[in-house]
Amino acid sequence: HMAAADAVIPPDFELPVDAFDIPHCYEGDLGAVIVPEGMIKDRVRRLAKDIHAKIGDNELSLLCVLKGSYKFFTALVDELAYARSSCTQPMTVDFIRCQSYEDTQSTGMIQIIGLSNLQELKGKNVLIVEDIVDSGQTLARLLHTLEELGVSTKTWTTTLLSKNVPRKVDVKEDFVAFRIPDKFIVGYGLDYNQKFRDLNHICITSEGPSFKQTE
Ligand SMILES: Oc1ncnc2c1N=NC2
Ligand SMILES: [Mg+2]
Ligand SMILES: [Mg+2]
Image (cartoon, rainbow, N blue to C red; front, side):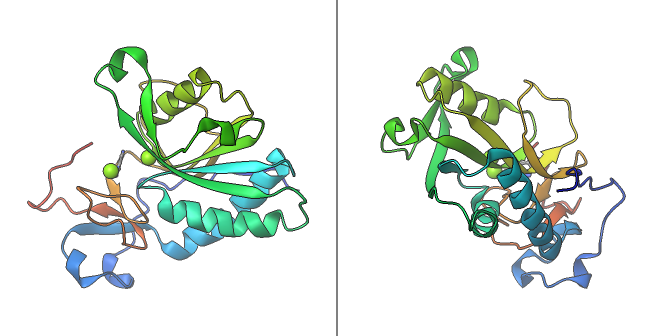
């Protein structure tokens, strides 16, 4: 098993939108494609092997952090199933949403919506599947909350995208699919005001008047 390498998308790597199949409703909103769907699939296949090599055959519970990571999550579970095909322990999936409390800023605790009870995670290895690490706050708060709630099992994190920006809080990103520049991206699950999640390629938005950058 060769040593795993990072996939870093350089700041000047921008492919023309019109070189790909883009939903007509998004014409004009997108400035360039920076990670085409095929490249995502290829990278996720290797990432699954790296994850299995590290976590091994223990019973594994995967947490999909909705909504943004749904596409990455599905692709990763498909590839992990193959990587673990000789495995005797099952892999389970859960879908959660993270909602802030009004005092989240001070406590660092978030509401985890969707886990019927945390007992289901006890004693298992947990892999948190995120769409993007930007400030690091969401993931750090989720890890902190799980810890506070006594999910003391071995927990790993994987993210489709890790943005090259200073973190507000340091957080462990065990498995990163792509390291991207500090640009606002949409697609492959990631949204701008709930739009573009269905876009199959990761794109940067156009500078056009219809956009004010939210991040
Ligand atoms: O670039 C981004 N695009 C969509 N959503 C988010 C981003 N960064 N943090 C959240
Ligand atoms: Mg997220
Ligand atoms: Mg969003």
